[in-house]
Every structure is written in structure tokens, then in C-alpha cells.
Image 1 (cartoon, helix red, strand yellow):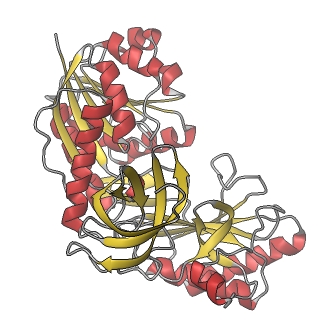
Image 2: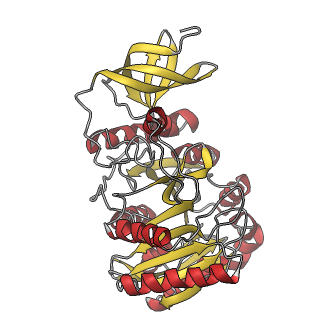
Image 3: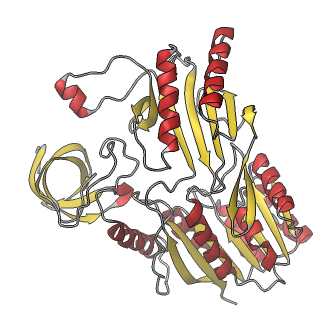
Length: 469
């Protein structure tokens, strides 16, 4: 392969990290997106590294019998649902293998038999939340560049293109959420074009339309948050006209919100959100409970599969009604409130103060009186003093972000010595690292992968740890 840019007739042999497939050519590992095991293809090398390279498919010599027909018109460019070309049962098989590989290879853990992965009931239109960016610079596809058929300089709404932080891939049709997402997004784009509203320029840090977020509830409620960059009275009037149009054209919007973001980044967690019409929040239902979700709230994005995930957590916790439970990284208290009826007391800790407000409100709404919630960095809140004041838990549930738990949190958990730990993770690699640290006092008793994100490489995993005694 030395000096070679084209690889002819490479066979794809496996699924690899980041949703890519894997080929082996003359001892070199080659990572290839949008391919499946059994494909034979001519590849173009796009990047060489020590010990491996990355390539793209030039043409298929022979397509695998496993290959499925992608259903999204943006497949292969968007990058959001890279596994549409892989049948769903195969996706589940590879996700299960990914979990086991991470726990054994990274964590060096002795595992019981891994329970079969729980597949998602819905594999399309399963998300309750979507975020889109707006830009005056659109991503150009390879076909557009090769043919010279370049679009005119109209602003666009869609997803950020990989490797181009200031460009947006325009999306016409997305299957991650029911069709209302397409109607709303495209209506905003068309209104902006017709009324000459400006789209955000990330380099110049100006332009009215910056982004939008949709939340859809299983109670039928619909939230739209419009993110704008208002630098003048004229832009304020333009934003108001757009919001009035959306309110009148989409009466199904139960929550129409907006935020003025003139910062360098798109995050708005530190900015005030204004209500233009309707409610500042929506409600989602889960097993008889109602959860209040605001624009800044965290809630599992696959509503129906979240219930299955939390059932696993509850089952692994094995509560009898006498236990003190700590729920770390509690978010809006969804797990804490879901299990509270089977515990003596549940204490939730979360760094986002607004989420803790929602967690307390969710307890109040559902008549749950045996929860306590504390706002602050888990690393700082969960201390020996905290354990002395509130008691040592019999059960700890932890659901950290992708980066996993800080080593200080792991050390405090080891000091607390709960009988059981239920570790929920969206990143089996960092979960494996943390479990390895906990293994000095705990053994892995159960492993249950749960697929929350069909057609992507991502997988949720729940592990039950038992104290060695």
C-alpha cells in the first residue's frame, strides 16, 4: 500500500468504531464509512495514520447480502444515521459486541453472560428532541462540486457538517422525529427566504437566524425554541414577525420560545429564554408519571425506549422500600422519581440548577414526598461530609455524561460502600474505565445493553455491581 491512494477490491470484514466499517489490506487496517461486512469495493484513501488509514468508497464491486436500502435522502452526506445500510438486527448484534468488547478489553473485567440487547420498538421517528443549525454558508456535496452545479447563496437550516464548524448541511427531510419537524423547519426556511431574513454567519458572528430546537411529547405537546442573534431594533422586529407567523401557522405549538444568543457558541444554558406564546414547558408521561420538561431540561430522547431503560434500572436496583438511594447525575430527576415509590428515600445530585428545579417540581406534580435534590458538581457535592449528613446509601444509581465519572466521584462511592451500584452509560468505553476502578470492591453481576439510538453506532448500557463483602 506504500504511496497508494486507490485500493481495488477491498473486502469489508467487520463493523468498527464511530459507525465505520473495517477492511484489512496488506496488514493495514482501513476504516470505511457507509459500508457493511461483505461489501467488496474500490476505496480512495483520504487519510493515513500510523498503523491504519481512513478511506471512502469509490464504487462497489459487489454489495453485501447484508446491505439494507437506506431510507433517508441525506444518507451518506448527513452522517447522523450511518447504519441505515445495515439491517436493524445486525445493528443490534454489533452493538452487543461493542459493549462486551469495551468491558473486557478496556475494563479487563470478568463478566457474567451479557443479557440480549433490548432493541427499540420504533426505529424511525423515535426522537422527542431535535436541534438544527442555521447558516449563510451551506455545505457543498461532492456531487455539487464535481458537476459545478452550485446553489445560490441562500441561507439554510440543517445539521452541522462534519469537519466544517461554520457550515450547515441543508436538510429537507429527516426521519428522526415525526413529520412535524420537517414542516416546521422548512416553513421557517421558506419564510426567511421570502422576507429576506439573514442567516447566521459563524465567522462574522452576525445574522438573525441561528438555530432551532424541537421537543415533542407523547402527550401531544410540541415545543419550538428559536435561537436568534439580535443586534439591532430592525432584527428584533424581524424576529417578532417570524414568531408571529409560526404562532399563527402552527396552532399545534403548545410552547413557542425564543432566546437571543450573541455569544461565540450555540449553547444557551446560561441565557434567559423568553416565552412568545403558550407554556414555558411541556409534559412527558412515563408509567403513570408526568415529567415537566423545559427548553434546558435533559430527558432521554427516545421516549418509549427510555421506559424500558428505566425498568432495567429499577429491576437491577432490587428495592424493597427500606433503602436509601443516591441518584448521581440525576438530571430532571426522571430515574429518581421513577423508582421513588419503591425506596425509603432517593437523593438526587445534578450540576444544572434548572434541572434540579425541574426534578423537585416533578416530585411535587406526581405527589412524591420521599426525594431530595441537590444542585452542584457531583464531584464536589458527593463528599464524606455529605455522606455523614445524609447517610450512607444501600444503592447508588449513576448515569454520568459520555466522559464518565470523575475519579474523585469513584473514590467517594468506594468510601460509601453501597451494597449495589447500578451504572447507566451512553459510552461503554468510559463505563469500562470506571468499572475497572470500582472492581476492587465490586463485581459485575449483570450487563444489559439497551438500544436508544437506532441506525447509529451509539448504545446505552446498564451494569449491576454487587459489593464483594
